[in-house]
Structure formats: structure tokens, C-alpha cells
Length: 169
Image (cartoon, rainbow, N blue to C red):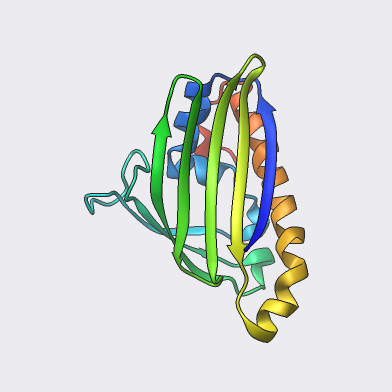
């Protein structure tokens, strides 16, 4: 599988960064408009709709339409791991259905002197055959702007202490 990694430091406490990334509002706040993300449904581990926290077993169905024209299709992701210690917190989501052969995303949050180091580590596999070969160069090209935006947006929201990210475009 191919891999992608990005890390940056946010001048905010680990607890704030962790709580922000544990919600659907956090996800939508750090997703660029050009991705055309629409959260269709979210189910908690017990099957209840719209949980406050995306805990292990939570499942989210989203659709994407990059730039409003590129058909991205439906994507189902499940939280399969979520842990927190005093100095490190992480969760991992996997695509259970969607346009790629595989997608695993580990989100790590490390307490550091400057605040919190965010590490995104993605392992992915593009579709086989002609479609995969055609899209292969777009894998990293598409991921880099996406994660640059996510990290920049996280810093902008959390370094000023914004507790309501969903209300801002």
C-alpha cells in the first residue's frame, strides 16, 4: 500500500485537540470546501444516530464530489481504534466501503512543550487496473493539499480557542 504522512504542531493543549477531532463537527470544520464533503449519516457503536463522540465502532457515511464535478462517490469509514494516555492520544479509521481498495488513517496527537503535535498517517491502495494507474499520480497530489489544509485549519481554530468550529466556513 502507498503511504502519506503529515505532521505539525498546534499551540493548544492535547485535551482540546483530542476533543475537537473526536466529533463530526471537527471533521467538517477541517475539510476544505473543494472536496465537496457531505456527511450522510453517523452511527455510534450502539447504532444510535449522531453520537456526540466518534468512539470505537462508530461508522460514518459520506459522499464527496471534489470541485463539484469530479464524481467521488460514497465512502463508509469506521473507527476501529481509539486510545488516550497522558502524553499521547490516537484513533484509527478504516474505509469499509468506498472508491479505493483500501484506506487506513491513524490520527495521532502528542503532547509537546509547544502544545500538541498532530500526525496523520494514511495507508491507501487505489483501485486496480486502468483506473488505479490513471489516478495513481493524483493520490499524493490530492492528499497533500487536503492535509495541509486540515493542519492549517486546525491551528487557526484551536490556537485561538474556537470551541464552535462548525459555525465557521
